[in-house]
Figure 1 (tube, one colour):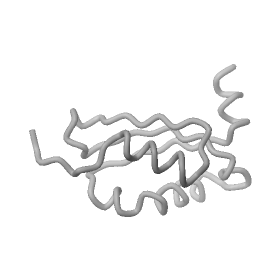
Figure 2 (spheres, helix red, strand yellow; figure 1 turned 90 degrees about the vertical axis):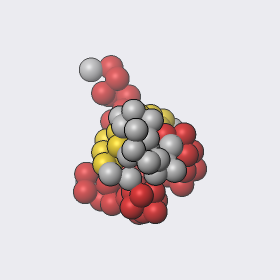
Figure 3 (cartoon, rainbow, N blue to C red; figure 1 turned 90 degrees about the horizontal axis):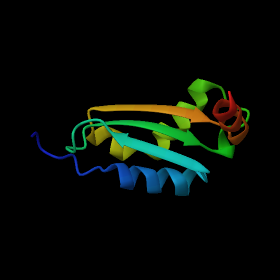
Figure 4 (cartoon, rainbow, N blue to C red; figure 1 turned 60 degrees about the horizontal axis):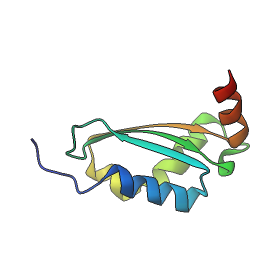
Length: 89
């Protein structure tokens, strides 16, 4: 196993929930536990009125230090209304 980045799915989830006032955050460590590759779903009212690029920039700004320490990061960002529609579709 490669060296750990010190970043965990739980720390990412907590920071996103707090900083973005997220109503739902799911972060999956796809690296097998070494903390190098993460995939996330983030639902926040702060995304309202933002296009996809703006949402990703918002998330990347919140996690600037963490993203610099890991190899790969992917986030899917939704408003609460979009998330509810997606769940019922």
